[in-house]
Figure 1 (cartoon, protein in one colour):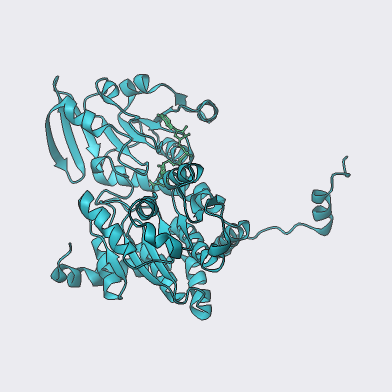
Figure 2 (cartoon, rainbow, N blue to C red; figure 1 turned 90 degrees about the vertical axis):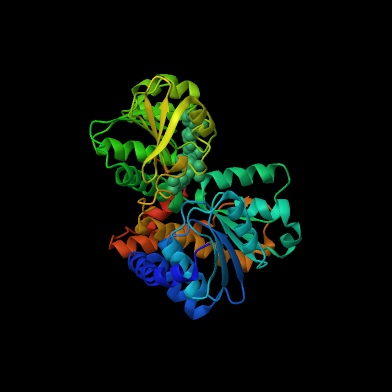
Length: 419
Ligand SMILES: NC(=O)c1ccc[n+]([C@@H]2O[C@H](COP(=O)([O-])OP(=O)(O)OC[C@H]3O[C@@H](n4cnc5c(N)ncnc54)[C@H](O)[C@@H]3O)[C@@H](O)[C@H]2O)c1
C-alpha cells in the first residue's frame, strides 16, 4: 500500500505526467470531447485491470468524462506508477494498485475492482475476466461485456470460449489492425529497447541480439534492433514466420544454437519456457535475458535460480545469476515485461497508446450500447471503430487520405470488368 503521506507527495508529479501524456494523445482527447458532451457512459460502472501509467490515466479520465464510474487495478505487479495512482486517487477514482505489490495483493486488488459490480470490464491479459468467471460468477449476469487489450489475453479468452466457459461477450481490441499493427509492433519495439538501454546503459550497436518469436512484437523489436546496429537472430516455431524472418534478412536459428551467440535475449512469444536451463547452460558470460511477452513465464526463472550458485542485484532491475563455472547471466525486471516493469522503462510511447486507448474507449461505448445483444464469445472490434481511430490519428498527424473516384468504386465492386 502507498501511505497517505507518500500519496500527497506524489500526486502533483502524477498530474504533470498525465497532463504531458494527454498533450500527446489527440485521438483520445477528441473522443473525450465528444463523450463529455453526449455522456454515452452515464451510470456505467467500468472495472479495469491495466498497466497503471500516465496514458492509462488519460483513458480513465476519458471514461469518467463520458459519465462512467471507474474502478482500476493493475495487470502486472511491477508496472504500476505510484505517482499516477496518487493523482487518480486525488481525483476520486477508485484505484487498487501500487508498484511491487505481491502476487496475493495483485489478485486481492482485482477482487476489489470486482466489488464495485462493474457493467463493463477492460482487461489486459485476461486476469480480471478469468477471476470473474472462476471466483465471482454471481457478477456475470450484470456484465454487458469486456474489452481485451493483448494477444495473451485474447488467446486465453478464445480457449475459454471454445470450451464453453466464456459467459459474456469480449471484444478483442488487440486484434484490431489499429491496435496490433502499431501498438504490438512499433510501440513494444521502441519501448522494449528503451527499457533495456535505460536499465542497463548497454550499447545496442554491434550486439548479438536474439529475438524469440517473430509475431507482431518480435518483428517490431527485430527490425528496430537492426536499425540500431544490432546483429539479430530470430527463433521461431512457426514455419511461415521463420521464413518471413529469413526473407526480412534475419538469421533464423534454433534456440540451442542461438543460445551460444546472444549478448541479449528478448522473448516475445506469449508462450511458456522458451528459454530453459539447457539454453542457459550454453550462454556467454554477461548475457542479458529479458522478456517482452505478457507474463513472466517465457524465461524459466526457477531453472535459472537452480543453475546458479550465487545471485545478487547489481543495478535496479538487473539481477545477476552466477553459474558454477563462474559465468554470469543477467535477468532484467524479474523476467516481466521489460518495457513496462522496469523502474526506468517508460512503457509504450504516448502516440501509440493514443490509438490503443482510443479503441478501448470506443469499445466500452459500443458494449454499453450493444453488449446485451452480443453472444458470449470473442468478437472483433467493429470495423468502423477501427477506421475511425485510424482516420482521427491521420488527421492529428496532418496526413491526407486519398478519396477513391466514382469510377474506382464501381471498378472495385465489379467482377465483370477485366482488362
Ligand atoms: N510488452 C508489451 O507491451 C506487449 C505489447 C503487445 C503484446 N505483448 C505480448 O507479447 C506477446 C506476443 O504478442 P504478439 O502480438 O507478437 O503475438 P503473436 O502471436 O503475433 O506472436 C508470437 C510468436 O511467437 C512464436 N512462438 C511461440 N512459441 C514459441 C517458441 N517456443 N519459440 C519461438 N517462437 C515461438 C509464435 O509462432 C508467434 O509467431 C504476447 O504475450 C502479448 O500479449 C506485449
